[in-house]
Length: 477
Ligand SMILES: [Ca+2]
Ligand SMILES: [Ca+2]
Image (tube, rainbow, N blue to C red):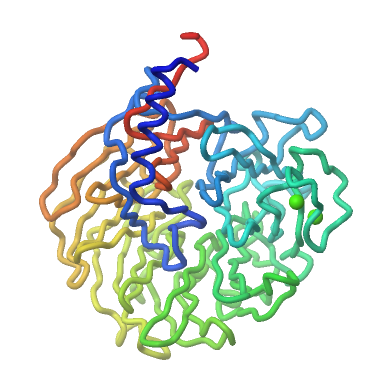
């Protein structure tokens, strides 16, 4: 490295120390609010010239497992089209671990596709779970419907950790498994198309959606008694509680992911389920506290009745949620709500603080700060509303489908789209686009801020972006 490059890297390190914060799960914290207070992150960059690009890592051909950053490691879910180990070839789901500082590949966990095919495990979709990292353990859901606990250090620490000691592959780039909970064997889940849940925890319990759903006929529910949500003991990997309120009312699949937060003094686990209802549970006991229907009673599946794929956000005792459908179903009407989660029972009427009907079908999660809420929809619109009243301040058209979620970092909102553009907007009641740059291929993910950098995936690459750095391309050496 040249002296100039060293100085540039050093300046980047100085900027990064301004706020030091990992992003160890989907949404950064259990309440899943897409907000970060990190300052000094870039609003412009160029993946072609390398401006403000710290490093790039090659992923598979489709990547849906949003990055998490913890203890110097970045984890992402992708497929196996960038095969890193010839002994583990073919279509697989892959979790990859990279060194946060340099992008160096550390280890991977690969999972063969299920023999049942696309009904349970859609070809080439890889791992779509965003892991939770706590105390050096990463918890995630494989494409085979397993909840996996793995050592964040892998075998780099030369210790085989956890309850599982008989890993067939135990080289330096193989995963050190702590325990495995197979949701198909243990609770009878029949994941529709792909198991995708991003775990969250409270105390020693881990909360996971099972993704139980219909079979390929889109008529039958093969496993109507399987739970939608389970709680697992983090130490033993054993089931603690489960709930199956949804019964055989699943419209399609179950791809929303649970959220945890204290609401009016009670720790709640909030989960949006396959019948289009949001349900909440007392975190330790699993006792159901309330439920809320996100569809008008006269809505008809699939034209106007929606499932819920977005993640609920808990903010100041209120739950915010948007409904929508599988992107394969295209565009349509949507609904967004603020729910008073201190209420109990069926709170569809009593808990409805506001209902926003101008949103289209959405699979995005909300960002809330300073009395404003940002909501994106699959038709390509970003909505800025008053969080207390649901009154819109502005709507911005991205002109492309939005799969990811708006991320509010300091005073800027970052949002990616299917055209591969990431738009940067000013946080506030007045619409102002600050910048827009293209990532080279579709962005189906959410911008993840951590420790003075942003981690952004397009379909097949992971970029670390930071202010004042310049990526040295191999061709320039
Ligand atoms: Ca280890
Ligand atoms: Ca082990």
